[in-house]
Amino acid sequence: MRPPPLGLLPAPAPPQAPTLDAVFRDHHGFVWRSLFHLGLPRAQVDDAVQDVFLVVYRRLVDYDGRTTMRNWLYGIARRVASQYRRGAERSERRLRVVRPPEDSQPRDATEAARYEAADLVRVFLGELDEDKREVFLLAELEGMSATEVAETLDLNVNTVYARLRAARLRFEKAVARHEARHRREVRG
Amino acid sequence: MTELGPSAKRVLADYGNVVGPQHGDAAQNWNDLVRKIERGEPEMQLVTEPPSRGRARLGVAIACAAAAAALLLWFGGRATVAALAVDDRPSAASWQGGSLVGTPEPAAVVDEVVVVADDVRPHPRPTASAADTSVAPIAPAPPAPAPVVRKPKPSSKAAVSVTATPEDAASALEQVGVIRKAYAALRDGDGARALRVLDGHAKRWPTSEFAGERDLLRVRALCLAGKKREAESAAASFQRKHPGSPLGAVLEHCAGKEPTP
Image 1 (cartoon, rainbow over the protein chains, first blue to last red):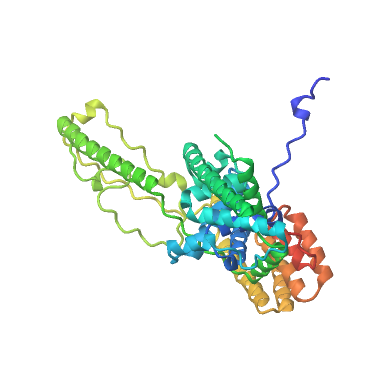
Image 2: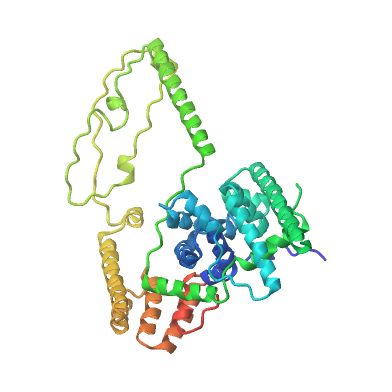
């Protein structure tokens, strides 16, 4: 079948601007986790989430789609978190990252194991450099590609790969140590 | 690059399940967000994060390079000028061909200043050819004519389309005042007063550039006044007129629909 003449092709639909509720629905979890991992205590995260989306509400008209929505949101979340943390000591921020959630009470053995694993990650993240932590979390927990992480954090892709490789190695070692300890406890 | 092993992935997945918003957090955050928007709460003033050490170093290097280039240009330029024996007096009186000669005179006060493009278009700056540069010094140019300031011709279409009339500006200012009054009424929780103000605006300026804002405020005013059905239809009308507007969700909530975060 011959294609219709160019003049008769329907005009492409204009790109639909994202609505606030759609952005909120799709990315609330991402923004929440990002703020938590950027060092905000759990009690402040919800307020910070609202502040992020308040900025989104005012500036959504300026979003031109040149970066992914997650990139854009992470940039806002980073700055909001920075405002929240202003004045706080770096060491205190580290403590916040490793602090477990206040309402984390396991209900059964499976959940207890899950919490134990989560604690392991918390301790690991608390000990990790801030630069590597961001890269590791975005790549491993949020599933971003190295290119996307590089764009989000305004880094060279090679830097992302280097930080990610180092963080992965350390994480593997931490998990191996944890499992060895666990095996010893089961035997003993 | 080596990926994480299965154990590490499982541990990370467990962490992901434990750390995150709790059930109901999204709905609560959405409701609080909508309330903040309705209250007109200002957004957080975000500061730009300081550049990283690497970037700062790069910035210093670029600044040094730029300074070196400027110095080179400066000395090189002066040498060339000296060689060509061209008068290098300060640039205050250098634009001889145009209208800028010497210290500018204070502008005459006129009752209505409308710049007519043709009259003040700068004349092309004379380009010095090789022959010109050998002539030194440059003879003082005759005083340039002062820029002509004229009143616009009533029949001139270009002047009408380019220049905003004082009436337009006054109207916009007046409209801003009216819209502010409506905002104030909403802030006071007086939906009926806000509606009266908005009706007055619509009657006086039916096709205004503030129509979008007026429509938005109308929905909120109807909400406040307890006219839910009218608020719903006004919200629908707003959505039709402004498809894809981020305000749509707020309006839905305002018009009594449950938000869907």
